[in-house]
Length: 281
Image (cartoon, rainbow, N blue to C red; front, top):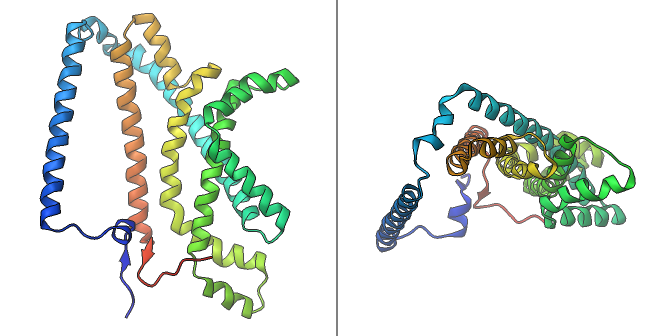
């Protein structure tokens, strides 16, 4: 009889009992009440300081405002899509180097992965913006934001790919070796297709981090959504209203990406952990 798949939550935690469920409901209600009170206090403070006056919100009735924000949003999408594509390729290359049987290549890939995972993307952006030009290397602001974001994400994606490879049962590799297949062919024909199927939801979720990392594009004066919002703030002195609208836009985009990840996970029906899954070495 085949084992039924378990979610990560089921594997790590026991199902809550009746008392715990009541405590969870009570804690959730209390937290929601505290959040509602906090929001009410924030809105009251905005009202007292005049931030809710119509003059701070009237700019959103103009088509030019939304057109300018749309231009910035397209700039954000260009950076996010390009950085995501570069991170996927580099992450796959780093993963292949990390699991290689060549000692120095595996060690070098591991050091690179740990470096990119540990260094904040903002620090990498400053490196491309302040350090590289001193050596006569000039690049557009688009690449000064895209490359650092891609490098920072590649370290995480390399580990995501490696987790997918480790999740493929070792017996398939042994069966392929018994048929005389080489290591490269086994990786390309058997392991990678299954590993990619397993980690697709995680790869899509990582796009949320990439999108959020693009918000620091103001450092290099790239015209993304946040940079264009800053221009509108300086023109209309509408700090709270503008950041509120931009935050809503980012929330909608990231929520859509998360829903896409959930949809792909259900469509692929790839089990995360099963009762008979062994921990690969």
